[in-house]
Amino acid sequence: ILLFVFVILLAEILGKESLAYILFGSMLRSLVTIMSYGMLMYFIYGFSDWLSRVYAQKSSAVNEKEIVLSGHKVAFMINVLIAFYILVPMLLSIWGLYDTMGLALSGMLSLGFTIGTLKISVGIVITALLILYSSYILSVIVQKLMVTSFLSKNDVDKGAQLSIGKLLHYSIMLVGFLLAISALGFELSKLTIIVSALGVGIGFGLKELVNNFVSGLILLFDRPIREGDSIEIAGVWSTVRKIGLRTTRIETSDEADVIVPNSDLVYQQVTNWTLSNRYARIIIPVGVAYGSEVQLVLKTLMDAAKANNNLVKTHAPSVLFIGFGESSLNFELRVWAVEATKRMQVISDLHQDIDSRFRKANIEIAFPQMDVHVKANDASMEIKSKEPAVPEEENEKEKK
Image (cartoon, rainbow, N blue to C red):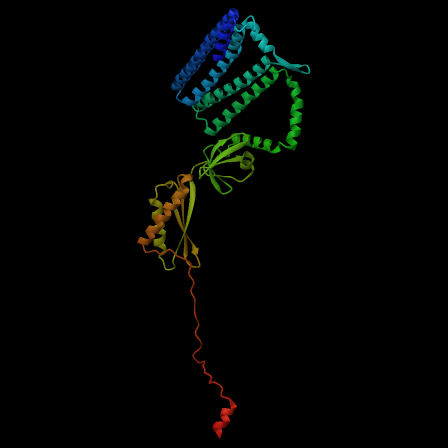
């Protein structure tokens, strides 16, 4: 603005009054137009926000934050359309580059380049981009509405809701992509060439990518694991946070995010502790010293299990006398934890309670021992002491 003001003043000083008048008038009308567009943009965002919140309040199953975010995306697309199809042509006509807005718009849309017999213009590119962005917004809105408003009300399993939602999302995006390709002037029948080339690429370098993609579909529809499940893979306990079409994000007990290829979850052995229920079986081995009263040990272990509130009441605990060890009588306490993720805490609580009860009952927890037996010599054996040898010269002197 300061630059335009300087140019206007310079034109006025140089006696170019008509030029100064044209520049001043164009600048003033441009400022008014831009300010009007800014107010309209603010109004569209405000109206979208209000409409989204009203809808979210009427539908309790819809997340208000997500629906408001979707409304903002729609408002952004509307503002971009207004800017390109109204604001920019109006500014071009104000500054005299085109006589009317219609000529300015047609002039903008006709700009482009030619590839062989195919002409790519600005209008075509803008149309293709709008189709892609519109399909993305539509897929997000349809996915959220389908999951939160329809599937959840019909008591559809959460894993099935996510699978159906993702399928709708990618299906709409695929249709939008094909429409965008068609808008650019490519014939869909010629895509077979691209598909053939893609097949060669898959055979050489994209095999793992396609494998992970197919594995992602298997995880979404077969659902051997679901988001929120507690799994054990490669000996590590983790919680499934998000299942994608290529990778799955899991969170370890250290709150570290690990990205796992979907093929690893399909083709490798994975222990899902929460697939059918969230119970976890716990086996606690206990060894007591020889001479301990077996019935008292059995009763004490059973009392410790019954006193723990984090165990499944419908699955009765059991205590087994396993056998005779080298240094101990071996027992096992077998229980079921209510929550698999709290398994280690339950084990710790049971260990503390068992130790306390054993001390009160004077039951000794065994530890490795070794008895050493020393065998004495037979009494009939005589131990003779040998006298020191005397030299022969001294013996002869004594004889003399």
